[in-house]
Length: 309
Length: 273
Image (cartoon, rainbow over all chains, first blue to last red; front, side, top):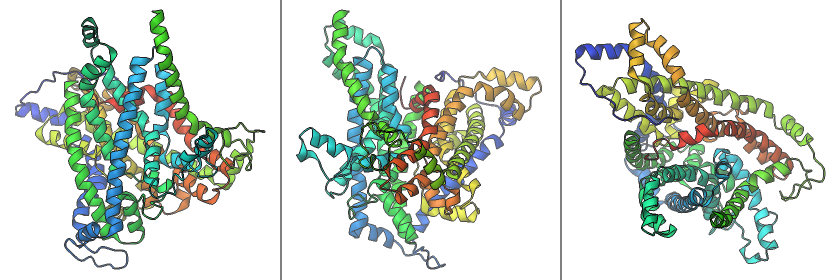
């Protein structure tokens, strides 16, 4: 795909020009997109603000204002609060794992290989397109404590002590889920980082080599510093993804054992199923606020990348 | 030169090892979908003693996969068409006519790339619009979630098409619709194909929206059908695997055909270059 060219001319349109523009590019061209997006994404978000201060539920047709009670409940009751902590842990762990592995893979593929670059990139990206629900089912079998392939493999290598109850040990389950998520998502981050590495001008490396820099110096003094903007974008993408995690938890552990892997969105669905819409909305609204702030910043950044491109 | 080649051997070996490890789950699915129930119990890596293609027939008959497959196809293609139409037209008007209102609208729409969905209050909107548990409803919802990304992607591309083309067409007597569909839309092909492929892949994988908004099992897409099938036949890994292979096949085909577009689309905006 072509990169957009820079230097778009901005006219200050006089009245005639503006009329002409409105005629060639009429408002109804954008109306469909604006309507669908406003009605099904923005409106529910805004409604959430109001309804999280109410006792909205399935069992009564009346909706009463109850102030901050839903939020008070979320921050006081253990399993609600716990779901927020788990979501934060999951997000931090997946940001760390995906960034680290994706960076290693991107460097390996761009700096280490001379051939088969496309082949490896295609294989490593493949899990990203497989539906999460399917990935979850497959890993449920792979991580099975007695018959799963992973434990069989570890036992076969004589590493019996490492064979764990991956998904049923409450201390471990959340990290196992994060690992599965990393397997699926690392390729996507890697692809972005590869693109970021490939746009660094070769001249920098050539100049460094003349000055006698080794590969280690190049990594620390050229590649990583120039990759920072890209790494920031991938971190925010991972953050936004991690906070709304649902499918992978749902299929692997359904929030269990106990509440060990309960996250905000799995709890939202459970409360929703029980008909407690008020609390459920309050939880969603918390996420909405946090993510909209991060999102605002991400979009600003992506727009500026696009303009300077 | 020779030393360079030698040096790249460990890197190549490492890459092969990693690719193999990433591929293991896909391989496991495929071999186990061809095994007997007993053989597939542990979902092991061994090749099957005897290739049982009838697993696929059993799955299609017992899992009612025909309907689910058709549903997924309909939702994913229908919503993709909606995204392409609404995102290209919007991006075109917003990019060409940069009035203050349109600049705001562009920012407003692209905010949706990061916005989470409030599923709980969305049910209220779905009820009010009578779209809950309907085919149109689910297609429109899918489309609404991808329009922001589509607009973002296509907007960036439109700047590479000279404005003079629009002006010439208008002088020759084209109306805005004719200008767009006969002249601009074909020129936007790389951008909307990228949008279409990425949208289709996402819609095919969508699990949460139908979980909330499609109650009747006859309307379920593949993802829900597979999840349900897994609940019923948890110990029959050969059938579960066959079911999954059928679910994954369309996206893998789209992926192999459209890889170039996918990678260019995923990196737009994320990379300074």
